Image (tube, rainbow, N blue to C red; front, top):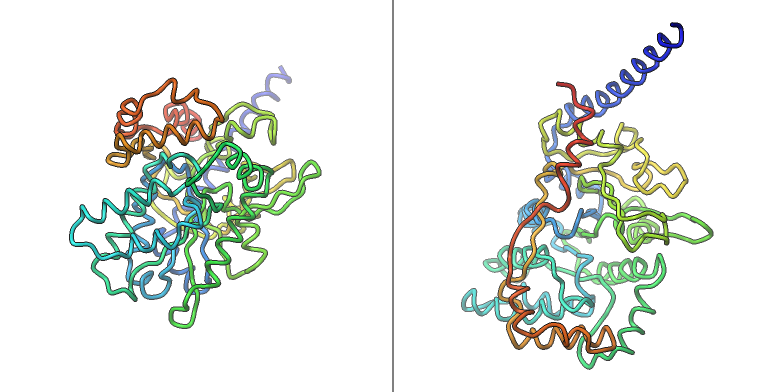
Amino acid sequence: MKTKIAAILLLNTLFGFSQSEIENYSTFLKNQKQSPKEYIFELFETNNIIILGERDHRDTTQYDLILDIIRDERFINNVGHVYTEVGVVNQTKWANNVVKGNYKDTQEFEKEFVKLYRELDFNPLWDKYNMIKYLQGIYEINKNRTQDKKVTIGLTDCAFEWKDLTHKKYEEFKKNNLRGLNTRDSIMAFNFMKLYEQQNPINGHKKALLIQSRPHAINLNIVYKEKNIITTGGFIKKKYGNNVKVIAFNWYKWIPKEWKGVRWGLEHIIELTNDGKWDAAFEITENKSVGFDIKDTPFGLTEFDYSYEQNINFQDVIDGVIFYLPFYEFSCTRGLPNIVDIEFAEKYIERMDSINGNTSYSEKYTPKDEKMDWDEFRSFDCNDYEKMKIQMEQWIKD
């Protein structure tokens, strides 16, 4: 009997503690009044560089907010520069010529844009719609502005050229740029810093927005299993210190397949942060869009999703959070309409054969197959939202 009573008391204690945890999160959120957009502009008042931790590249909803920030007159008049992880650095000048260009009509812009997009990345073609939405959005912001009021963009990924590419050259590129935990992050950080230093000041200041996927954006500088791990955000924070703020979009815990056996020894894992407590708190507060500093808050004191066995909390790697839409409204989009015609489909297949070092791809696919595949355009759930909702709803009272 005593054992049964003790067990009940223990369950009640655990349940009460869990509810208290959610209440701490939700009470904090209820007191937050600042929209994500206003939060970013407040940060720019006292900081020169904002690193925005993007969620899944495929999610296009986040770019509604990003473009809303960039088209704001405060951004145009005081910041004027935005950089992205996606896009090889050596195409930055060309990209600016395209998004700042003057065209007789939309068709003329689209023609130049397609040429640029095909050379944008070291993958045979950047297959996610986010960059089309972003770059076309920048052009729309710029097109009716005088040259001195047009937004300048920067591409920060590793320098790369498709012209005269061979399998040997591609393998050399991977060896020098993509291998190792820090190599690509250090290159992207260096590319950003070089471009940033070349900026012309606006109102006496150099300010910039840098968009990186969250794993690169965070401020991480640790030793794990005798290896130094420094992210792009870590390198930039080390250089510019308190002049930099790292702000992360709400997302979920995502461990990519390529990390298996390298960092975690796990299969591909997707689950909500802190077992769904963050998202439960957002749900309780009606998913209000807010931005807030994270230090010494219930969110900041949450263990980071990838703590490397070192008790790292979120406030150790990011400075703030933007909540913008619940996870079950994230929309991933596939397809690049009008980017791949038959002629480029042939070139795409050639690129795949060059990467593979054999003709296995061209033996399997025809240019017609390739064009049809890329023309397919659809939006879909980024992950199994129903399963993730169950994880969230365990913390929500009826």
